[in-house]
Image (cartoon, rainbow, N blue to C red; front, side, top):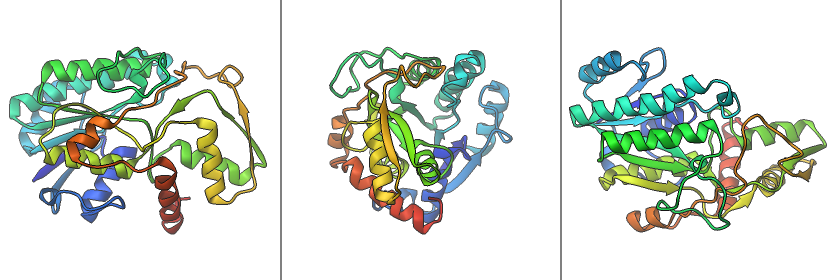
Amino acid sequence: MKIMLTGAYGQLGSELQDILKQGMCREGAFPYQFCNAQIIAAGLKDLDITDRNKADRFLYEHKPDVLINCAAYTAVDKAEKEIEICMRVNRDGAMILAELCSKYQIKYVYPSSESVFGGEQKVPYNEKDLTNPQNIYGKSKLLGEKAVMTSNSDSLILRAGWLYGFHGKNFVKTIAQISKEKRTIKVVNDQFGNPTNADVFCLCLLKLLDADAKGIFHCADEGTVSRYTFAQEIINILGYQCFVEPCTTEEYPLPAPRAKYMGLDCGKIEAKLGITLRNWRIVLKDYIQSGRQKEVL
């Protein structure tokens, strides 16, 4: 089994590399066929996914069985000004790889985001609900999804919630750092979503590949929560003496608009894999304990 990872040194790509190399993850054993898999790790210096000719040659040369496209433009606020580059990576690059994977009969995986939704409803979104992204990043991911499914209907698209892991920047690591240094912090209490541990996300992705799944699935830890409550729980588990002051989105303006509600219904993936996703508080506690052992928190 040969697995190619584009964006291999970003947050998700690094997590997948760790798990595949270790042959296990904290959430449990993954499918046997991925044990001892050959990993083709491609960072931006190795492969520009927006260059069709170079991507074609790269795939032809390496001939992977699976391509997981972790290459993404994820700077949500910067994307409001860097529209062209965001679209080129998240939409055009995703489409190019999907087309080439169809050409070479490679299984293609496109990780996506809860940001494709607009926050109009107050119950978790399922895969059939209408999309309505509120910012450029969300629009680019949605256009990427549509381009992928049009170009390669056998592709697998897996939407995450608020993704966090041991690599790169994320909400948990940011809160852990600033709450260690400050006595009081402000966090918005009117934005709701699902924390999504990268270990959980990676395991579910591999299990879906083992089941030869295609189409769109949601993957997140169980339970929809506000950013404010999420931050409180992070600090409580860490044991820091930092007070979290709630504020509204309007009181904490950012360049990119955010949807107020982006909860994900993960019933489809649970039914497909015969699993029950664990509550976000339990997963977070395990993550923080492991993070302290690894000295990354």
